[in-house]
Amino acid sequence: MIKTATTTSSGTSWLADADKMNELINRIAGTAAQTDDDEIFPEAVFDWLAEAGLLAVTLPDRELDTGQLLHLLKRIGTGNLAVGRIYEGHINALNLIALYASPNQKRVWNDDAQEYNRLFSVWNTQADDGIRIHAIGEGRYRLEGAKTFCSGAGWIHRPLVTGELVGADAHGWQMCVIPTERVKPIMQDKTFWQPLGMRASVSYKLDFTGVEIDEADLLGQPGDYFRQPHFSGGAIRFAAVQLGGAEALLNETRALLASMNRTDDVFQKTRLAEMACLVESGNQWITVAGAKTDEWLGREKETDRIVAYANMTRTAIEEICLRVMQLAERSVGARGLMRPLPFERLHRDLTFYLRQPAPDATIAAIGHYVLNNHANAHDLWR
Ligand SMILES: Cc1cc2nc3c(=O)[nH]c(=O)nc-3n(C[C@H](O)[C@H](O)[C@H](O)COP(=O)(O)OP(=O)(O)OC[C@H]3O[C@@H](n4cnc5c(N)ncnc54)[C@H](O)[C@@H]3O)c2cc1C
Image 1: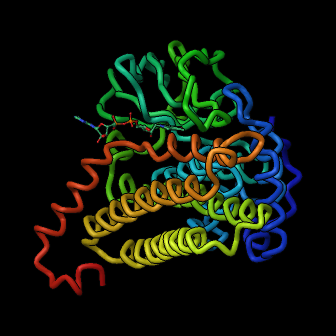
Image 2: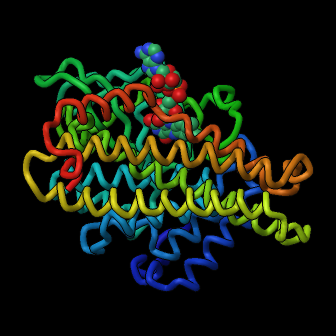
């Protein structure tokens, strides 16, 4: 359980302090190997994030712009990709709350994050036995079905779960936020989780059958979850976390080569140069994606452009990460790929975390946007 109500930092002040941030990221990286296990949630790390005020850093009064958020996500990913995944889910849920919650719901859920350090997540992925939310009268709803890939699993206090709303006046894909301590125990299927990497994200399968909630636990209207540009536009956040994995590989490769006195070799220099260029181009992608998202969200009729830019960012960062892994492995060789060195874990985590939904459709959507937009290429993203 994450410690409650001891937060002293506002999060943004922590972010502005480079030494504190570096120390925090190093501390997170230092524990990553200890939680590299299918059943270990990185609890201590979330205590640290809570103490730093980073669980509440995106709340409306914090004035964090999207670029700053993306760089924070990247840095946490550099420390530990599994932590980055869970943290990104928490931020995503708070973002959906900011977009779609009523004023009263916002007060309650923002307090959950800020005062009680409660962890949120977004669990949308499901298999054939997915979720139905049955209206059972008098403002009550009963869930039926399961979600797969529930990052954080039973350690999450306020999972945002989606499902088909049935039996009510409105129908469709509905979000709800489950007050876990007030509902029946949610069954966890740990056998689902036998992954290549990202083990500490404990992304189990959870069965919500029989869980009952109130009207006040429903978030937004049916269909809101898929509203653009927020749905696809959010891909820049997981891309930022992924980039952190590439940055960790660059850090570690440099350190290992230095420790082996292999820094004068021209091939190693060439590989490190390419890795540095790739990681910095990833930094530029997230900086610009953040700035453009903020700029275009303030304008009308920019939905498709925001989505197309997010799709490009995500695709470019996937390629960056794949190439950085290859270069790092060539640089450190077989002996570098053995524990206790971190490369094999970083490789497993990043390889697995790069597998996000519908990558082919994402590329096709970029092509569609470019082919159907008649602006001069120079003006496409201006
Ligand atoms: C570590 C980790 C944690 C996660 N945590 C969460 C979480 O907390 N909450 C959550 O909701 N989800 C979570 N997910 C799930 C994630 O959001 C994606 O749904 C999942 O990673 C995509 O799986 P996939 O690669 O099998 O996807 P797919 O979309 O099935 O892609 C696999 C391949 O099939 C192709 N493809 C896709 N559709 C079709 C089609 N119709 N016909 C032919 N080919 C197709 C794709 O282009 C791709 O090449 C997590 C995933 C990971 C890896």
